[in-house]
Amino acid sequence: MADLPRLRAVSDCGLLVEFAEELSDTAHAAVLALDRVLAADPLTGQAEVVPAYVSLLVVFDPLVTDHAAVAAGVKARLGRAVGGGGAASAHEVAVIYDGPDLAEVAHRTGLAPEAVIAAHLSGEYAVYLYGFAPGYAYLGGVPEAIRLPRKEAPVRGVPAGSVIIAGGQCIITTLTMPTGWWVIGHSPVTILRPEGMLFAVGDRVRFRRVQP
Amino acid sequence: MSAVLRVVTAGPQVSLQDAGRPGAMRFGIPRSGPMDRGAFAMASAAAGGTAGIEVSRGGLVLDCITGAAGFAVAGGGFIVERSGGRTGSWHAGVISAGERIVVRPGYWGSWCYLVLAGEVEGPRWLGSLATHAPSGLGGGLLRAGDEIRVTGGGPVREGALPCPVWARPRDVLRVVMGPQERFFSPRVRAAFLSEIFRVTDAGDRMGVRLRGPALGPEGALAIPSEPVVRGAVQVAGDGVATVLMADHQTTGGYPKIACVIGADLDGFAQLRPRDAVLFRSVTPEAAVGAARVRANAEAIAVAALRRR
Image 1 (cartoon, chains in turn orange, purple):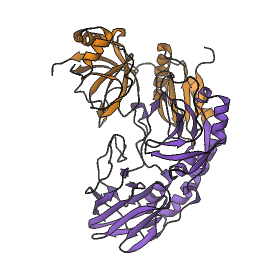
Image 2 (tube, chains in turn red, blue):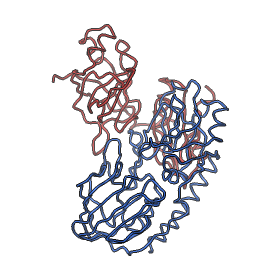
Image 3 (tube, rainbow over the protein chains, first blue to last red):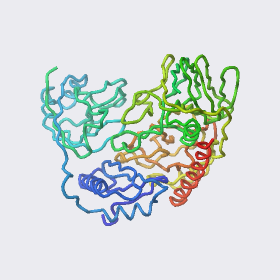
Image 4 (tube, rainbow over the protein chains, first blue to last red):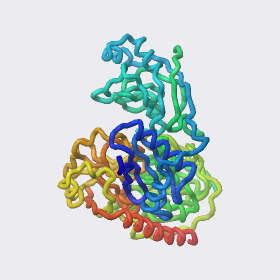
């Protein structure tokens, strides 16, 4: 671990800070910590910071700085704690469990549909990252009992607002898109708001059941 | 000046664009904006505007319904027809009520910009009119019958604009290797840097797929999704490479063998299907140097157009 994180040059405008090669809670915590430090104490020429599971990308303006200066700035900020203001927000999100795949998830997990719903409701979720499409927040924390690999082939036209799961992750979709994830319900919540996204990376989420 | 313009016909992927919405990649939102940023900057400077229409090889026919609007066209070797006259795609002027402007593909190039003088009205998303094509958010893809209102534009002098040498298509693309080149064997990396790739017609604002030697990664399909930048050369499990463009996904689990540097991306965007490209590796330091050289050249050209 002595050589971690690894700093990798990305094109002419980025530095990828990689805390691990595989999924790890420790590495993700390190991503969130560095993200907070870079927000509180930005680097010269820092354009934006993109956190992911185990890595974080610093995008910079190549007219102002370069990879070496950004790497030095990142190293100086590693392990630094940010006091106050860094607390994650908690959200409660309403779900109507009427997804077309609920029965299939129940069948594949050997649970009753009500038990699938109860398991999904029992999860304590965190926003790991955004990706795939605007507003697609990847929520980690799906309980073991209802973790399934994604479908073999994606299904087209899954509507915006669908609550979908695969493996340990859950997404509330924001656009009508194809997906190979399991659609267990839908939510009236709006993540993609004109004034900005509902969740920040690192926020906590609980689901609440509502009737159709 | 102000005007209302009506779209008579618009090919696929013709959209409203401004310089884009930077800073939202952490929310899964790429910058979007023009595929050829340099050409858009030239048209904006010449028109005295900040937004306009990105025209694909599908072309555009636009009528001016009321008023008059200054405009500038730049990007590619398109053909512009107006009131019987015909010019190339590096041209500025004024379009008035009753006039029609036609932008269609010419000898080279894939993207052309019609920037309007003044302020273009339209749905802004997170402060920008730039269209994110996969979602349609922002100003949006244009269709027959759409109306575009523009207000507050100054006069634009009729005449040709210079097409700078850096606005031409590029067939040798400088790349910075990585950030996931370690998942490719030395043989595959050597092939990537020595063999010819060709642009395919599987290309849009999200990315352009290439045809060439298979670049099969070695057991990399389980890598956790990492953030990606425009220009990243992403290799899917089948060994096919895609260069990510303006509306790219912001994270991805496919390994990126290299990234095309910003200075060469506009020239790549202007290539057409079946055009050949070669990748040449440069150091990150050289890539930053190239970005500065290119920005300087662009700034000089843009300043000259502003004084025009």
